[in-house]
Image 1 (spheres, helix red, strand yellow):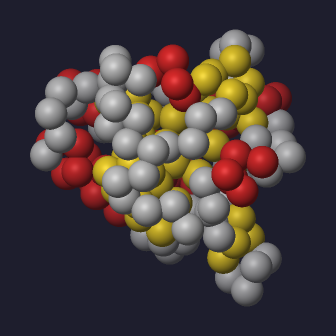
Image 2 (cartoon, rainbow, N blue to C red):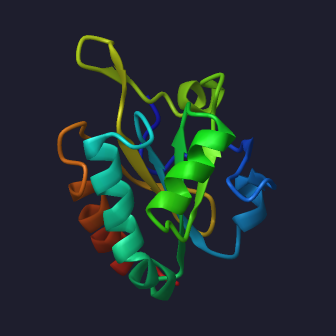
Length: 152
């Protein structure tokens, strides 16, 4: 399991804007709130995404970028982002390799992809890990509190 204080594994995935997102491009520039979620347009995932949306400016003021990842396709992410006016990118991890790289466990007896949020500081170091399938909006408030304690 990845631990706080470990370097965040680098990866590249296609984002909703059609461009390739590479984590290492942000190193030295800004913190990243990387949240893994089970599925587009499900109740918990929609609540979480909309909570990140509603507080997105707070995250930007704290020097962070929010990035969501699920195994849904780029097309599914685009529909989900448009429907809920999400101002941040969603990444399509269709083969689950990044989920494995970040050791995100499955939930509910292995039936669902897990919901885990990582706060990665601008130096690329994991500062926070929160794993909770049921507390979808807690991921947002907890990540914000962690960011408040990090240097910008």
